[in-house]
Image (cartoon, rainbow, N blue to C red; front, side, top):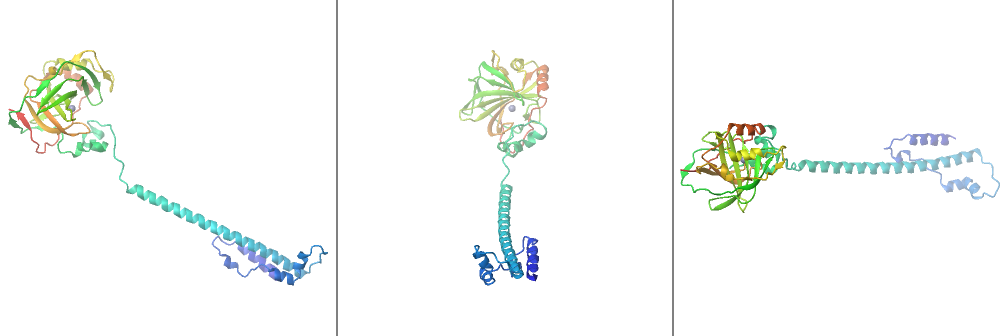
Length: 341
Ligand SMILES: [Zn+2]
């Protein structure tokens, strides 16, 4: 009976053992071997069920209970081992997952940020000229270029500049308020030739104030006529506008403004870009850039010396749409400027 009490206590101890307990802690508890059972006659009683069961002595009953308890302990030990193995496997799996997660996070952190690809820009504030290159990676020249426009035109070299050959004609046109300016798209067939190249007029648009300065002087408004040659080179003819008599070609544009921004109005009349040009065709010329994003360089600038007149009413109308749509002047950075004598 003492042995049975000891075994029961041991079993209880196993039952309350922690997850880290090793089965070796309960070494010494061994289930009875069949040989021992045989020696005590228990094996005989089980082996011969046909014979009338002999009443077991108290000693035998104790031995039988001990054997059953040993079996239960062995079963419990096996279960504990299995549980321990399962917990260890789960912990290893969690460690591996955590390592993979950390490795992934480290890789993501080591990658450069995705390139900016915004398209919204303005002439003032957060999206203004000082930040254009941050808005879109392709606009890096806007703040990092060395041959940007507009500039304050001064210290030009006076030379016998060739005349610009204009081949403009009355053309179909459409007017768009594109959110940055009023732009006039022209039908094909308007050209200017200079420096051995011929450029076709694509569009013209307005700025307030004029973007170029001449010896520090600003003009109330300006017009840019944007041309391209067959190789994709750009030449921009810049006109200064000053207060004076009404300009009929400008009035034609104002008369055909679309009612909504971003919409295009296509009237059934023609527009003659010749009507915008000043009488004198002397000019300044230098290499610069587009004055709005993407600020691409390699642009040939042709700035007419004689300003063009427009009435105060015509200027006032544009100022209601665009009070300020001019990029600040950029560093000339020692660029050569040539001018007609
Ligand atoms: Zn422009």
